[in-house]
Length: 246
Image (tube, rainbow, N blue to C red; front, side, top):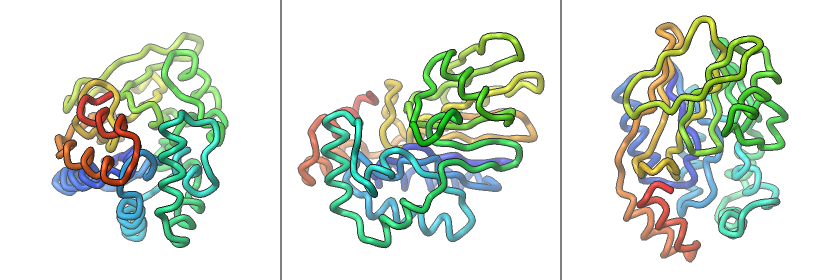
């Protein structure tokens, strides 16, 4: 099964539309939205409506911490994220908020567990960004592969029983193998706010039969999104970071 996985869209319409066009060309069997549809970006309503249409057509969508903040109010966020969450919350209709609030925290498909942050207490939003947190993520589930987002930094952790995991940074647009003798945590890069130094939008294409995953990069008009962020009165840094991929 070939699964396209989109994480951390963050209300970035230009990035979302560019990625969806690329996904249509690849013709995957399933589509998974890995959480944080909103937050930071200037078009939360558009992105929620697009996600609702995708779910109606068979996509899986799970909840991220920014989705939760847009419904219940921000808590424990950075000042920029806190300000953006309050702004986002004011933009959404009751129906759009209800959609986000009803999303599950995790989902399973073809032997793979999908969660926005970590399989270890998904509602606590733990980051998987080092060997220790990857080990804790795998210890919380029996799934052989966990796919998550949240850090915006594409990474693959390979783990064997009794040994510390090994981290690998996948190359852009190059398939990385998934081993039959390892368990894996695949951290998907962000559609709407990449932070790995590459401003191009990122999504993952997971092939469960071929046992490989590709981080697909898609350039888009970052300046247009930054212009919308400024026009909306959101913090300038949120537009600047899109153009440098940080």
